[in-house]
Length: 344
Image 1 (tube, rainbow, N blue to C red):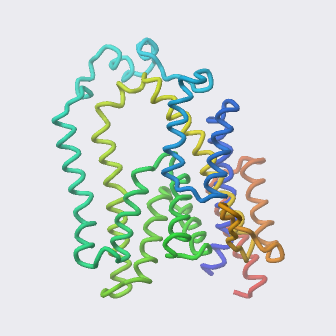
Image 2 (spheres, rainbow, N blue to C red):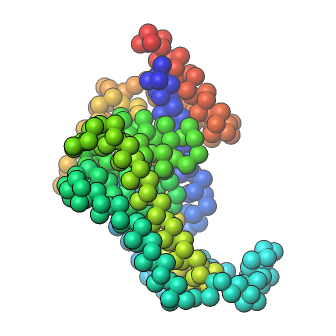
Image 3 (spheres, rainbow, N blue to C red):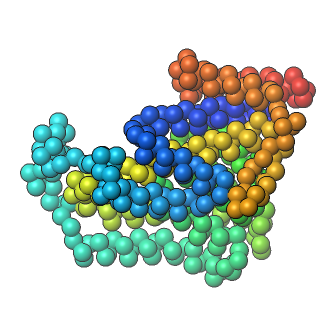
């Protein structure tokens, strides 16, 4: 029964991710330069397997350079005068200099950085000492902490990076199991933390070391949750006093505009990867010069999954059906189709 439900959910998740690409794209791709950045990000990720952090860094540098090279293509942030005329109370108070808690303090920044760094790294160092630097726990502590540091663009952007590394680099899960995790994540709010916990549990369960599989899975999930949240709180507490004053920084604004455009390509990469592994039973990685591409076996197409995915896409994009109803309907239809063809 669970397999049947997940068969339908995976088709719906494909529609959800495609809808996210279109939604973010309409907001971010305002000109040809932004479209080019998104396309370059997609090509770099899907065809050349460039790491997600490098794509984000490259986009930021392009934005900074583009601000001076072609400023009209990189919209500027709101000015102080614009903030003063804003309808939002926080903007008016910021313009009048009333937000004293946003005043920069080197001492406070150093204290916040030191405390958060110790809290973040203490469990990671602990598992390295207990289980070794080559253990799955040490790898999870470093990898998921690294992923948390570059959570630009929301969950879908980071999930593409997590899927790539968990499946292709570490070999913790198969592509099909990763699809199940992404489908599971869409059943509740907060897909990112759900997926990383799922990946961590399975990885530790399969590589428990001296622990029992279930104990290892729980430890891996707890550690991953910790290192996923702590870097985010570090950014929040460390950067909070600087955020409002940086809103009018034109260079930073240009970098963020370029990053947002790149995120469209990142999410598109996730949707294509998801589509290929959902619709086809057999997918092989082929190396062509510097490219590494997932190539499906066309004869392995799953027409039931293809039809269900198409229906979910039409429901969301054409008839504007909500995500919850799309997930529910796809799960019911998927369970029915799976039961009909597989008998349970």
